Image (cartoon, rainbow, N blue to C red; front, side, top):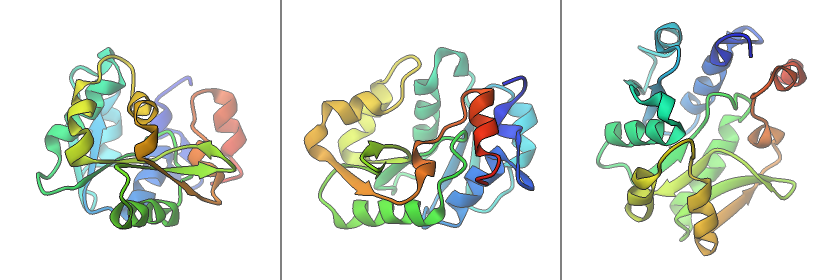
Length: 182
């Protein structure tokens, strides 16, 4: 990306601020921001924010699973759900997050995720009692997708009208394409 993508401008804020702001405006009780690569540069944009705990992942080079592990270790022991959101998906409105939380609270499934026109996206909520062990067992550069694929009968897909759930910024073209959507 030619720099730290979480710090790329998106409207009047940085990408990380947009993603974090959407979480803060939602019903999420606790937000744990896990930093690894470029932590010193990103930290000033996230620390000290309401309901936010910043943790460092010294093993970030070993892959995404290590960030999930660090986030889980910092999680309030009373939390019943684990919502995994990505900093490179800044276009997920708080209403979508709230709709997922509602599905988690009122449903029987242990995994809740959004779908846009039939395509699954992020963020994903995992029932802590059922899936914390599997999340902690992840290794390498993987997230929760394999858990979702292993337990299809325990997945609640919540259809949403926001295309932002399937947009992540991994390449310069992705960033250029979202410029008008922020």
